[in-house]
Amino acid sequence: MEKIIPIASNNAILFMYEKIMASKQNVILVGLEPLTNIALLIEVFPEVHSKIEYISMMGGGLDRGNTTLLPNVIFTSIPRWQKMFSTPIFLL
Image 1 (cartoon, helix red, strand yellow):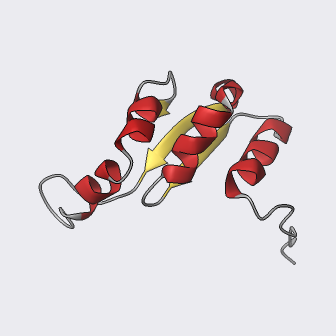
Image 2: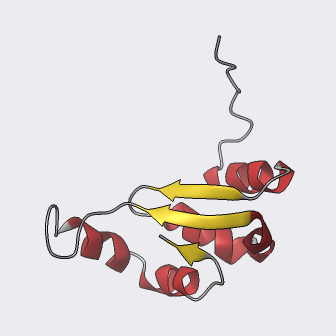
């Protein structure tokens, strides 16, 4: 039977921070649009860099598939995206 983990916080950024920092291994974050919570996590808690293996982003395609989604995702919060892209974390 799958273990059910109760939600410990109603704040997504704090929840991610607590779970990432408690992990014994580095984590891989898989972000679905618009990635604002991940960008805020990195901005508010820069110490998570050392615990994140990489971030896999899903948000559309540049030249095929859903080409309208990716620009909308990125440009909804340009300063936070710039902060996220300037971190040492590998983005996939």
